[in-house]
Length: 230
Image (tube, rainbow, N blue to C red; front, side, top):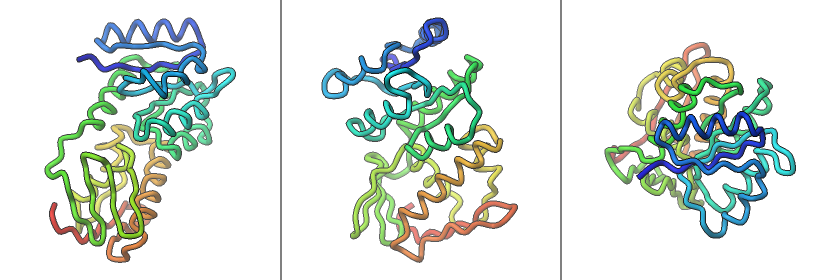
């Protein structure tokens, strides 16, 4: 079965080129120049595996569209296209739970690689479906982190980072290693996105003081999770 991609891009030339290239790479692409046409699908025929959303679109911008999609389709993988390099755009998307972003004009091969990585993360091969972390329980198939104070539905990227930290439990891991392994790139923006995700994990585990992700200035993080079944 082909990966079905929702593409929201109002530029007719770029949208057509992107659609044709992705189809040559064996993806199925439904291209929407008007994002308003996507909204009726959210309550009915929404069979996409991931979405690629242009940030700057008329009527509904990419961020607003993403909020509408995620409200109905939690954990839906999203990649943002942005023509601007302002960090506020990228960080806004990451804080919303986006899986990745890429600046236009983008290299088609890099875009395809990012798409494949997102899809791969969406169906991860994980050693165990349940992991007990201190007072918490993680269901990796449902991306559900449970605690007596409440449950959190994690994004794919959040869980991927958590599992990577678990594999390096009771040790020090550098920022560069995390960025190279999970983001496959290492620049200012990916570094800031890593900080966003680390902050989220700390917030999720705030009810258990035994769960520790300690920052080491200029190095990375010291990980100490009380794990019972990993």
